[in-house]
Each structure stands twice: as structure tokens, then as C-alpha cells.
Length: 149
Image 1 (cartoon, rainbow, N blue to C red):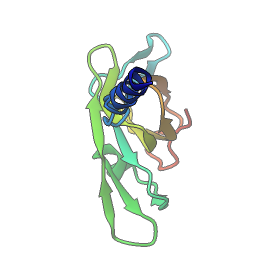
Image 2: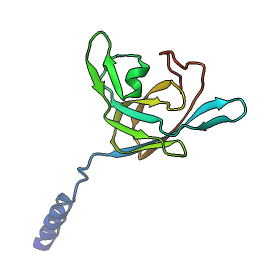
Image 3: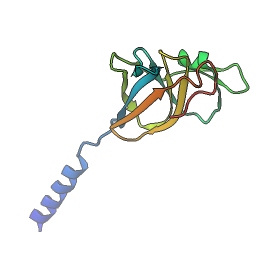
Image 4: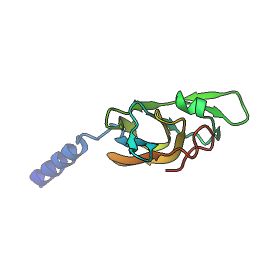
């Protein structure tokens, strides 16, 4: 009986001492960016384009290419400016990647370098890796309507 009680106590102590994974879960976001160059060459890698992640707060934001291109959002109906939580710039292949993003809801903003246009997409980081593709056209260039994904 004492042996059984001793084994049971040891088992409880060992299972209680198990390390817990206290690290917050994180993932990575990768976006392949390109822009329409012309009818002969088609789409090219959008080298130098930027992506920004903004933690969603439930506020609504005004659309503005100027703000999006510098990684800022203006809260609707106020002068409050919110800046990005994470950012990355596209390399020579047009790929921008942000690592170690805590799980949660974000606004993903892509600002083209080859065209004066942007795109906004609400996303949820909930896996180790997420990939997106954004091909910028020329139809919404110079307006603040942005483009869809």
C-alpha cells in the first residue's frame, strides 16, 4: 500500500512539474507583390513595395494613399494617427515577409512602389505561416479607393 501511494505521489508530482508552453504563439506573413508595368512586359516584381500590419482595435480609419504609403492610419472623425505594428519591404523578387507576429487580428496594408496605389485586407494570424499575393493594376492609381485582394 505504501509503495502504491509513493508511486502515485511521484506520478502526480512529475506531471505537475511538466513545463508549460508560456511563449505566445506567433506566425509569419509573406506577401508576393507585383505591379502592372505595360501591355508588352505585363507584371513585374514590385521591388521596394511595403507591407504593414496594424493590430485591429475596432476603430474605423480614413482611406488615404499618403498615410498608407508611410505606414499610418488616421482614425475616422479625428486627428489621431496610428502607426504600424510591423512592416516589411519587398526584395528583388517582390516578396515581403514579417516573422514573429503574435496571433491575432490585423489589418494588412500593401503600398505599391511601382504604382501609386494601395490595398487593405483584414487578416487573422492563426497559423505558423500565411502567404498572400497582390498584383497591383493601374485602374485605381492616384485615387483613394485602393484595390481589392
